[in-house]
Image (cartoon, rainbow, N blue to C red; front, side):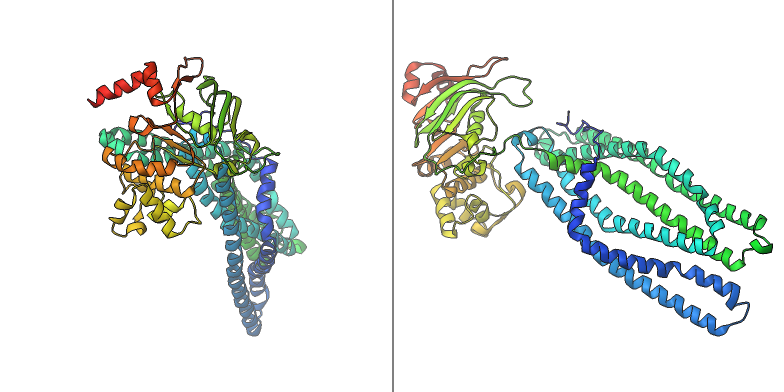
Length: 602
């Protein structure tokens, strides 16, 4: 399924199954008591609201002709009391249903987000983040309105329908059968419109998802857009996507708005039929119908079709939200490729020995191409390993396999002699530290960002970690020091400052295996020189894998492994391995890399 760009629609025909409906029922179950109370309130309010036309018929047939003032006053008082009951009970009903609706949405949104948290990297690699975000926010919000208001309204309308029918049969069963003659026509219309309407709203769901994805991508890449003066081109693309979204909405609405006029037309035809039948069949003799009954009956006919109109509108909402519900459940049902096996056990305290045995690996969307092929090496605990090689050689892939962000295609990755597939993922990753080139800083204050590596750490321990990696100097110079608020992704900080915060975060976590993936790429040379002691502190007593292009970062490593050598059809492996001095003497690929960097610097 192609869904890796904001210009590609997601798969259209996802079916809402009986299992999905059972799951919705599961979300409703905890609020069974609220539903029972609400139904009782609705039944009482519905009977009270629908009793008024019957009282009006008595006014017209008995009280007014007989000039019975006392009866009219009593009848008026009853109508007022009934109105008060309706108002009070409806208010109570709205209270209970709002609690129910928001509770359901809270649980559904939490379940969705919880599953997203556990999904593997491949899920996020293959989808624009905007298409994921819209499911957690927009789609759930749309369902919130349906559960809080629409669901209770349709239940109320169904009850009102039966209550009105009861009063209609009580007044005259013959006219009631005439009024029901339009129902088969309405059912046929709904059956014809439903498939086309469902497809139309699913198509709109795809377009709005594309729009959200492109908007998210454009905002995230705004610096690049303005740097290359791409504002007008991006606006043209945005207009094209919004035009597609608008057209899709129009197409869906063309079908949806057909239902209400059809219901209205059937309602008017039924009322006309009631008048005609009354005049020609029940105008005199023993079959005669009084003016009061006709008046009350016409009111009931109008009230009978009003709930049907509301149910029709709710049906439209169901069709619309079905498309959203399908997407939500699709995401909830997404299984992580990387997950604990049933026999997985807690990873013991890690010493730091790492071994690759005949490892093959290729990415899911890599068209079958292997990034690594038959890769084998062993690292003793406490050793520092530098990984070098050309772009795309597989350096980051090696470190990702150690953390089990991806699973090997073949072979084994062992930590302390234990296959990483055999242990619980969290117990493995809790003892590892990973620093990426793109150091992520969360919105909030700096001290909490560093403490993200160890929530049990005290303020003093956080500051000590920052000092060790030379981050304390710039943090202390900020307006509020460690309590300075930073924006999303740390955009108010420089890239180098974000990396220093990440260093402090990694040190605070005290991992036994540390992975530094271009972790000093954004730090200037002067700061890096000052950081060297901090790095020594960070790497002391830990097994570390360092990916870097600067010789100053890697030349003191225990071993340097040069990764590469793959072809278009096969993956790479270790070309050279040794210390900095040994590899320079060999005058192989590492030597060439060093010479190229030296010439560049001079």
